[in-house]
Image 1 (cartoon, rainbow, N blue to C red):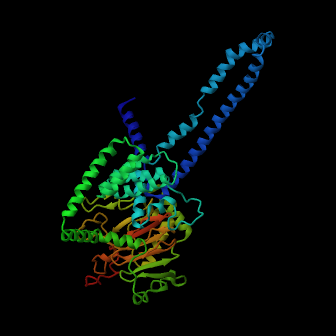
Image 2 (tube, rainbow, N blue to C red; image 1 turned 180 degrees about the vertical axis):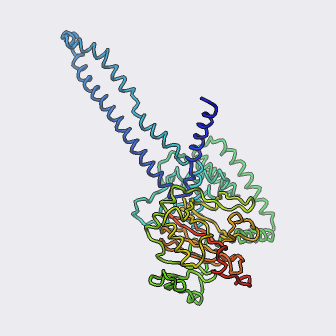
Image 3 (tube, one colour; image 1 turned 30 degrees about the vertical axis):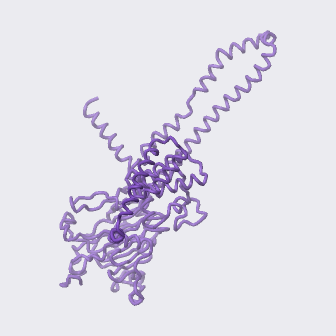
Length: 540
């Protein structure tokens, strides 16, 4: 075999290996394939069990037959062997038949199952997926202020009792979440999940995780957060279970020494200094990520409330876009979601068949969603955007072409210079943290390669209902738009002057329960010169 042939084989192997892992945790749509893979493996495993049972049944029948025969024969061996047929059959059994039994016992019935498992394993999630899914649970816990018991019991908001897919976390699961947080030096979440694991152990749940290991992690994570007394308590409890635990014995002395030192320092500290420290702590809390707090509050439905006077200016109407011929007889349902920036929702704007076709076209091409890196100017993946996306061009299918035309007819904007229809499916705790759709002044080359100017407007279709979470929120103004299947929302990213509208900074909240599918169209400036004329005032 030539060098070129070897290189080609290696290249094909590497391509297959690289395509096998697909960041499963970033798309529920792709994770559904894993369920069918697992179902196939369960069927294969059951076939293996049947084969083993069949083999054991044959061995059992042979043993029972010979047990009866030898019991009779050993009562009078000479008399039994005096019959020539019995003598012949004994020779035959020991020379031939016991060899067949040996072959049967040694026969490996697992070949089919192991072969199937080996083939499927190349498409399994890896450590990155497991860690990604775990961190998604921690993110949901923080965003929606859920306690560990709520998550562990499976009683999440949006999950009604009696649903067949409701599930709970075992001690092993809670311990694993704590360990993943620990590996990131996230001692806050380590403590929360180790406490939950300990609680379930104390309640009598059977587990392969031993209480000593849980207490070891727990005492250290509490110590790392500066809570010496609690760290000492957990260490003492550990030593009641395992008095010879070397690390705990060392920690006990160390924590005792540090606690005495801390108490002495506190006694010497003046009340004034103590008060100053408390004030600094409070200021620090207030200054910590104000936008993130606003974003998370909006996701929980705790955002700003519009005044009754402003609400009275929001309407629902039938809309025909200045007597557009297509919508004269069948106007669309339009609802004002927000006034500044103006966010409009269109109801029943895409059919079930269209949504299914768009998903069908997009699903095989879903790839980890990327963001524009202002430093390099290139597209890259980011932890703050957890989803997969695909791009559909108008020429690929009449449905995509019809959708594009509908957007143009309703908005009055030219979509020929718009980006292709982007379809996105969110993963476990899928989100997209606060961002702008348009390019800012500090990103002059954001869309230079397209040659169509900045993103003037955003059109967003919701192609699924979401049981809990998943809202589109605008932290600057306090708006929250909930996903409603078959609807679309529209807003302008730029003022008529071409200046960016910074109030359109928005985010996709983490999906708590459900599967979120959206598709969006980013419309660009080029081609809108006469459709949306410029204004001389910056914020007009």
